[in-house]
Amino acid sequence: MDIFNLVIGTLLKWFYAGLAFLPPSGPLVIISLLGGVGMLWVFKRTSNPERIKRVKRLVQAHLLEMRLFRDEPGVVWQAQKSLLWSNAKYMGLMLQPAVWIAIPLTLLFFHMEAYHGREPLPLDRDAIVTMGMRTAIDANVPVPVMTPPEGIVAVTPPVRVLGERQISWRIRPVAPVSGSLRFAVGGETIEKKIEAGPSARFVPGLRPSSILEAVLHPDEPRIQSPAVDWIDVRYPDANVAIFGIQLHWILWFTIISMVFALLFRKRFGVVL
Image 1 (spheres, rainbow, N blue to C red):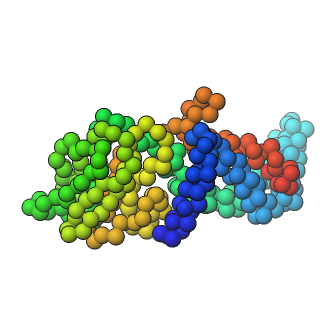
Image 2 (cartoon, rainbow, N blue to C red):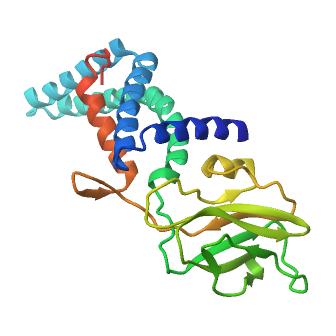
Image 3 (cartoon, helix red, strand yellow):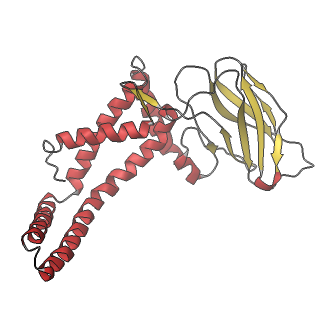
């Protein structure tokens, strides 16, 4: 999983770096259009257009049957049952390509969240950094020592939540920062990237230690420590503005890719 995340993350960094001259919404629009092309290609390769056409004709026939024989309850009842069964078959035919599309899109979304879903920490405003431990916290053992980069100050001493095996620090950015927090834990040093300032950029989320969590949070390499489970910085959520309309980036991706797919489905030979 680490290698997979590294490959996908590197490709996306090259993609966004090459489009850095565009506004923040520009790369999102382009990758949404590419997503629409990918969905059409996958749908064409994994669907059965002839069966879909037959089932759609059956649905239309049952609807017409219900309309023509509306004064005959027995016929209408049979047509309704047949209509439900035909709709179920149609949904089943749609399910296979939908699954093939959903898996890569979901993995892509986890990676794109760092580019569009979070904002860097605002300056002169407090934020929380939390470390989750693998085992119960001993109240008699000194807590890990956090060393922030220049431009970040620690506002309060660390606070331990023993029941949840968590340690939190309150920090405050006083200058634009693109660096790393360093934590001294049991004789080793663990880093967590941190971003602060006004400009939009890659903002990594939670840094995990488990392979499963690395699927959901692929922005940084997994923590290789027997003591620390994860480290997280609470960033503000971000929206993307297109034509002056602010929406979550996944909504924009869905709208743009689906509209493109609907408009160009016939050119790809896709039957819906």
